[in-house]
Length: 484
Image 1: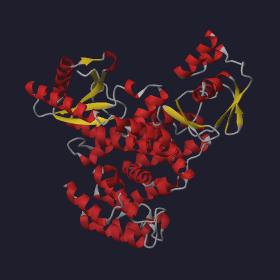
Image 2: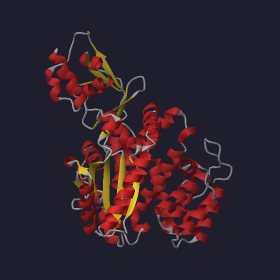
Image 3: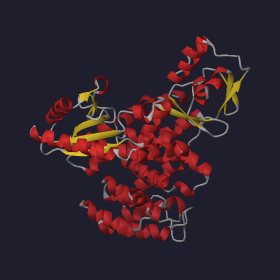
Image 4: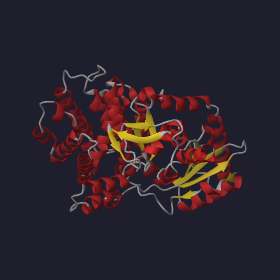
């Protein structure tokens, strides 16, 4: 039901309702005026799915409202494709809605023109342009993320190659940016949608696992009820408890990249406890550890040591009375708002992020990164620095047949070979990346097409490979060869 609602064609009535339901001081008349301009500009245009084109900017505007951004952002979302795809000009937008909206529309339009390339110099320059746009006004990137999210929700009508290209770009660029901006909900959905296009078989396998374990919902509901009761007994009766299931891609990473079974993933199911103060968070942690047996290695204190994207929470994994492990996340309301909406909390929750200084703190890393690279002419340096800040800790590459191989960042073509099959790894004598011979220690980059060159059956690996591989799977298979 929720999935259908997300993918439903949005109308202006839906947007008007979202604006009214938000309870925020939006200028409804200005938003309606922007819709009328967008509808006139896109008149007669349709999407690949066959629906009216204006439904796309309306849907993007609805997502912008959900993030809690301001009226100018909603107006810019409605007009974000008008200057690029219609006869409407930037001057038309400026005359109707002022310079601020015109700048937002221009920024989103320019981001849309950036086409990502596998060429290092071009990729570095494109990422630099994105960061520059973000540093000028982070709302540009937030609108663009909403644009990409709606496109990924409705990408079934794209040709297969376009779906794959968009999914790769989303996984490699947009999802990490959402993560770095602290927008966990957007990041997780972008990853899940991308995975659905990149590896539909793997995606279906995970969703089937979750469907087959439907009884876990009653399990986690029972735990939530017991925790709420115990916290109330300890003076924390105003707490809110949410149930959470790990994202499909989060499960996929652990199953396929860390070689775990579904049962070996401890944080598929989680309970989130939201309290008023930091002191209550630590008190609640003590209550949880008194109720359930904690796994010491799984405790993380992100309250005292926040993540780079400002995420804060206590994480602990405990064993339930049924012998099933589950994760407990404990945080304050402000931390929860920041975790869900990231920098957008500046607009959505004035109590959460109430000053411009705090917003500037959240995106200071963008300006620092650009400043440090201002005088550098080495595209490789810039690309490495940006990726260390933005891109995820894993890479996707393809076999010549189009199969997806997922590896941790830093993995080499040897890891790739063993990820296909131990026999392929053991017989490997070389590799081609995008049809070119590469050294055997070549590190895999997302989007590469890798062909493993094999020799005789009894060829066998080299012991030196143990110093080159990054995955435990490859190391174990190499060691097993020498145990024969």
